[in-house]
Length: 134
Image 1 (cartoon, helix red, strand yellow):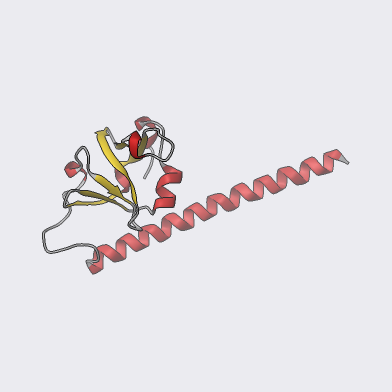
Image 2 (cartoon, rainbow, N blue to C red; image 1 turned 60 degrees about the vertical axis):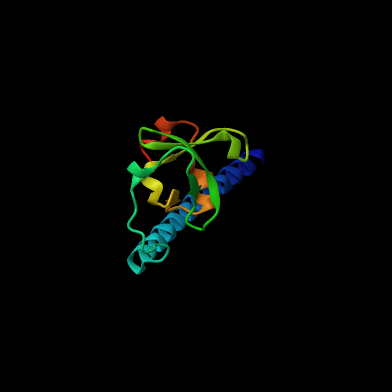
């Protein structure tokens, strides 16, 4: 009887994991679509000019998710990652986000293409983990 219970439990865990992966992919696609539409429609941009790009990321800049929530403050850029200050972190730890998530850098702020939930669930513990992120 416990063999059947174990198999059912394993199958349920596999299904839950697959649903979680599918949900993340849907959320990423929706975020990318939102960023694309905002870019094409000029939403969130102003007459002061275009994004400075990742090269414009500087220490102490506020970092905002695509939903508008502040998710941290730049400590520094490390390779293909932005290290966030631990003082603004909900768990008091440094977190790293891939530079590929930067939608624009404008007027002293970093704006990401991911919403706050995606950002906080996807940030990394070190810069090396960001090299394979897109």
